[in-house]
Amino acid sequence: MPLERCAEGTCTGCGACAAICPKAAIALTPGEGGFPYPRVDPARCVGCGACDRACPLGAEAALRRPARRAAAVWDLGEGRAASTSGGAFGAIARVVIAGGGAVCAAALELPEGRVRHTIVEDEAGLARVRRSKYLQSETAPALREALGLLRKGRRVLFVGTPCQVAGWRRLTVPFGDRAPACDLVCGGVPSPALFAAYLREEERRAGAPIRGYDFRDKSAGWNFPRVRLAFANGRTVRRIPACDPFFAAYSKKLSIRQSCYTCPYCASERVGDLTLADCWRVATTHPEFDDNRGTSLVLCCTEAGERLLGDARAAWRLFVGDYDLARAVATNTPLRARPPWLKARESVLAATDAPARAVWRALGRRAWFRGFAVWWVRRLGWFWLRRRQ
Image (cartoon, rainbow, N blue to C red; front, side, top):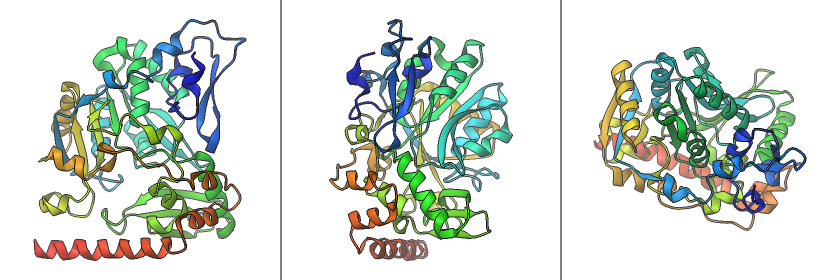
């Protein structure tokens, strides 16, 4: 495997190389910020080249396809309440599972604070992989299991960041339509090490282990999400995202992986059959698509993706409304621009003892108050807009 592909500035940590290696010679180990990077065991490597063929680096242009249409989507049943946005993923996943297939998606594991891709083969397991996780996930073990299911003739839906989907597509070329994929509109993956340090700091403050975490709790409405932390002593903390140190660092791109700053997938051309996101600011043009309970944005990029969405609409109570593709791109920054590099990133990633202090020092003393004010201005503005309409 060419060593330059494993460099911190280029490797995305998609896990495709480790998943395909027939000799288990590649392991993903923590590097800068706890991000996973492949390391090759020369004693095991036989030079077969399978990892090189699976790596998506250098093949990005060939993997991307232009979006065909955009849709505002939500689950008319219970799926929307259990989801961060409109519940589109859950409906699509249920179609695959109902047809005898499986879903490979990310699950948050507490109290470790680790995100791992896992295989779900029944509807009961979907609860583990619903909801957004703003963290780099571990993929290699789940990818190996998913490839095993595909070889047995099963259908497997993979859901992940664009770079992870690119690795999936390189791995599953022989399986065609039995390996559909949904990529997520991604603004960069935050540091696992920073998240672990942040959780330990929160546990010290609460005096109890963490038992529940929600990156975007919508109990105050989908348009006004909050970070939610639940502790074993019964204490629950909810914060405006811009007032939470971990989420604030992520929002300002102070904690993301090096390769995210040069991401080739920050474009309207996508690598998945479907692209999933939040349909932000939909109320400004389509107020009928926003009741503050969550609206998903779905981009259909292939015929297979359109069939998946159509099957989900037919099988479950799923609302699908036509949405303007150009506006979808304009209101989702990762569909048109890469995140900017900030010098304070190194100091934030190095803060493993007091991450909150390092984040607020990097952002400035007024960052908390500014975030609080912006959240309330947006909240009041949304209600004013609704009354005007």
